[in-house]
Image 1 (spheres, one colour):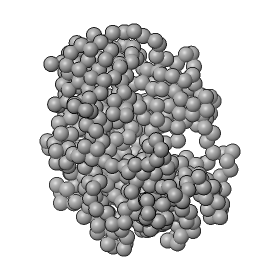
Image 2: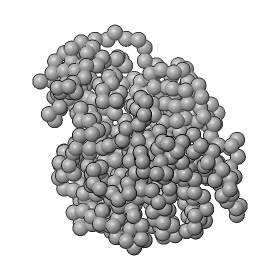
Image 3: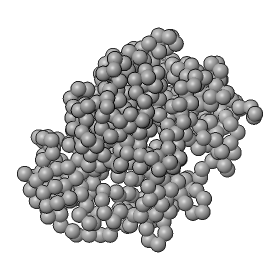
Image 4: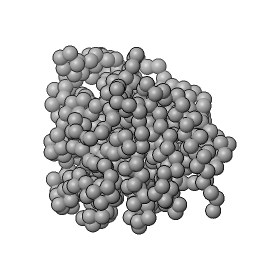
Length: 492
């Protein structure tokens, strides 16, 4: 068994962190082996006047929370993975009720993401929403992004529903987290809201013209991303978790309904680094980025936490892991570069659209980096957003999220929407006049232009997102984003 080169890993970490100056936000890279620190690399400060970051600085963990919740759920023995959600949450509409617990945890349920649904109703990211109201609203969604078990596509919806289901069985996630934290002597904690006091929490920073602002989220936090703690807290949690059999259960990818293998388990994804499939996960919230990778056999864990929105924690972790394991740069995936003619593409029908960019693709307004694969294919390196694409015969062909696709370039089109009028959905209102769409209220009212995608589909930009509008019938339209593909408006 080859040795791990911690000196090379440390050098790789410092090389990546060198552009983060001491007078700006930054991050922490911490490597642990058998409970002992082997690598500590730090750059940047905790916030104006608050001193430098360190391994005990407290960050938001964002979606790194997910594997902790999956662990708590399995420990509770409250549900089997093949139990439909409707058996635990009887008020769920028929579509989400049929999704199983395992599918909800493994991103296979097709459950819409509540934050993106709120965006499609014009509710801004800063606006506060309460847990019970969010759940009641979500329970009425009688639609899914995709058939359960047919694709792996990221959504926080399943974790929010399962947190409610677990609480009804007497297991409160925040209390379970507190019990683990007390047992291990660490500061890991779950918060209900962004504004809840968290001792020692460093502010997250979002880049703006000429400086930084502090990130904020108004929506109630859930088991999809409610935890905070230091890099050392995360290291001690993982050191305790890795030797236990439950780690294998959450790290084992769940196959699709067809039996096809995936790379995503229960809050754990497998990242390809050389010939290794390394378990870990990443997370992002306003002003924070988090990521970890681990090796159960060697009891090695590598954590990266940042308090800057542009900190690529998962990419940094993969880079350092490669150095640690002696993976030659020539073996690592090569960025795609100019992999296809840039521009917009769309499926023949439906809400699937994409934009080709150098080195990446944006699918339904979610960007994914691409790398050179075999035989002219270009692939993603994220198990929760698997992509295998190439440009041939004037189209993008291949697979997105384990499903076959063919996307054609969007041609210049003067198609008139013929959707003039007022439209409503769940109290939200928009107005269309020709190619102009009006959305919002008072000083937040936005006026945007509809850009044709063809076949009764248009794109418009609002709230910092690009939203697809599909005409269903004369009096029904649908708005969609990557994690929420079925919010319908009706003409009034």
